[in-house]
Length: 89
Image (cartoon, rainbow, N blue to C red; front, side, top):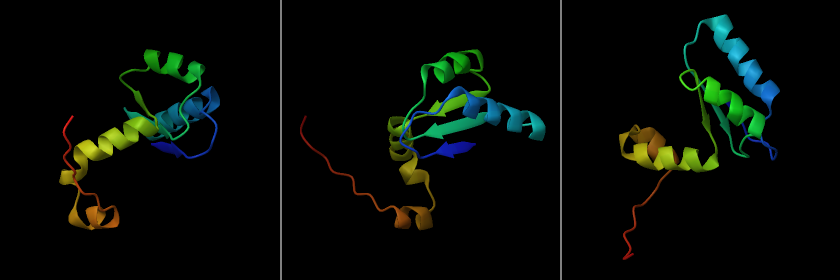
């Protein structure tokens, strides 16, 4: 897994670096997280690597965190306290 928190979308060399590390350690799957998103060259290549690498942008990170929040250990939930609020749609 690689996590990038910069202001610019992740480029192809970053993906290539992750794929190289995965090969070196024998990892079958990788996750590339970028708060700023991904350049089109990265998105095109991950279509070829669909079963090997997943891309998570800021929206996906938040979606996954909310979907799994109740399953997190209590100590992690204490560090990131959330409160469910219901509204009429």
